[in-house]
Image (cartoon, rainbow, N blue to C red):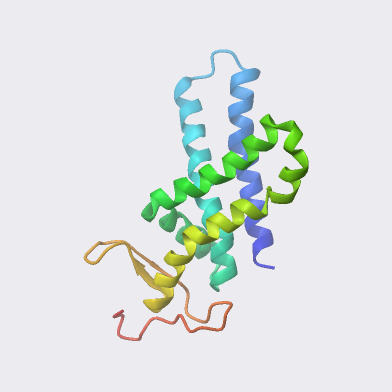
Length: 167
């Protein structure tokens, strides 16, 4: 129920930025290069959020805005993992596009393989959040943190931060 507004919002943004890039490259002559770059960067940031947003929805009970914000902060805070998840998804899509003889295998693994590999990459991050009572800091002493909303995760584990604000 919570995922529907998120994926509709993400789909709208993918169409806006992806469509903008397509139109600027195909239909519009003289479209400023700066705007193309901005659209491309926004599309990349949207992909960063995309790889974490649905696992966050599945694991934690958060509001729409907090889920998007937490996904963005996790994506930036764990940039190597984020890039690896995006590359796995792109590699599977490219394999389906460039190897038409493997289409039956593609149908079997196009969703499961990237999901499995991504789960192996984000599970340690989520475990760290749960061990710290819903608060994740990048490294000890860093200024930024991701706080998950009070309550329980979908497994029924408490992820409520302590009342004094300590970890």
